Length: 93
Image (cartoon, rainbow, N blue to C red; front, top):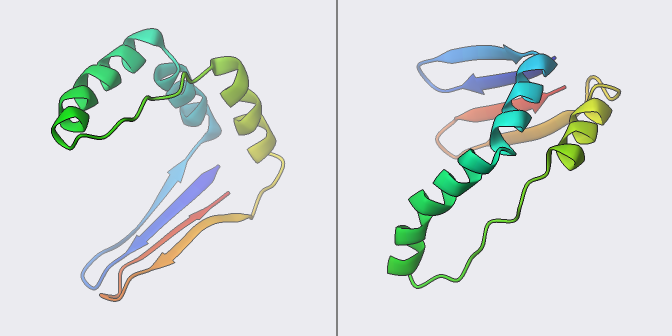
């Protein structure tokens, strides 16, 4: 299970994310429909900013083993960020 902790001056919350949800997210993000919509949504903004960027094709066969490997490394901190205003974000497996 992945744990996301967000701490601000006013609010602090912990969000546990089961690996099953990560697998569902990988399936959605790697779907052709989602990738087409993401390209469509960002195309206008990239053209306005005159940026040349192409989204790489995300393959389910590539992403699933990454999630599977993450399960083997429980306790590793993936993200630990502290902002000047006191906001903290921590993502731990």
